[in-house]
Length: 456
Image 1 (cartoon, rainbow, N blue to C red):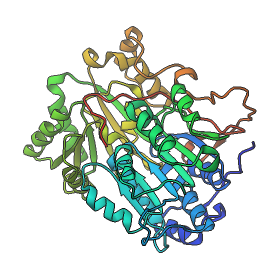
Image 2: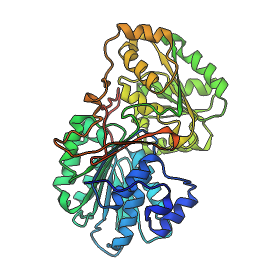
Image 3: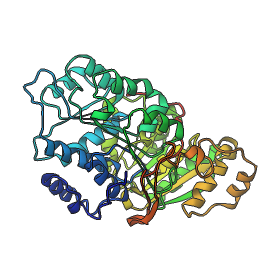
Image 4: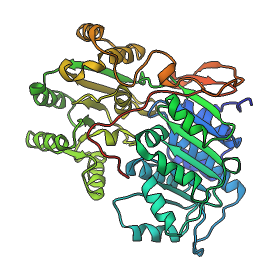
């Protein structure tokens, strides 16, 4: 039951040589803490439940060993086959995250025969079917579209060797549970004893662990950093701002940040476009992304933001999960979210993979009072300055949604009974504390979205 030894660099990971070459081309200098532990666990053929801070490099942590395993075991499938039989399936809750994983898979597999395909709603089924028919070794997608395409008889999961659920807590906790169970249990997927199953997420409350336990076989349990905590690479600042002052305060901040990429979160979809229009009219090139925008509009908005044409992006919480946008310098919570977990996910859009970032939040006790106490705890744990006025509010506030004292609701322990374990605490690069043991550990609380439909 002992977990494999961690790796210190990519060269000792045993990766397929071409992938190692592509890792170097992508300028990955050394593995992040989650990669140091996850890659050898997956390479050893073990099932894994992994919980790590947002921006910790989870995607490469599962893609690199899975792609290596596929190459070592021989690629099956052909573009000439009427029914495609992928060896790996990656399920993600949002279109943007699915596309990001697909792009990473294509980047790592460049120069090999491995072919990745991505499936998500909002685009032509016919086009995606044609992509599938050209050959599908690794399939990435959102639950609804995957079920739709598989139901058309063009894909068989009978030869599946790897099943990966990314942002698993959000998928299970936000209503995708039935779709996930259908994918895993009803569509010809091999039983858990005949496949390798990996779950990656930023949070893992105990009720989600129990559901996840149905999909995993004799798994290792990995925790990197404080589960549900904010990364210390992000400087967090909270200002008390009245509702009517928010726009002028935001303009003041954007004047200071200049052309640096800034992600601004609002709670309601209708406010995203309104605020983007207001900022653009006031000399700040801005775009927006939310669930009501067409897929082409979302992709154009992300492209403009990444290229710097619109260095300010207004987003609802739908953009808080899985988007890996390089060099986001600032995250601004124009509206604070309903839960502290969502706050952690939002500010995790900056300070990714060891880069430094800044997060600014506008707080109004009338609307955000329930967050006062957990916000103080998050700031304290990340060694950030806590405003005295927030301390005072926290003393009289009700407990915030999604936050509990150490253990319990945050799921920072392996809930399986009588698990033999040891625990070693290490310090990885970037100051991440690493937990490893016979069950290599996980946890946290589920997040809620306000004014966002579940869409894929």
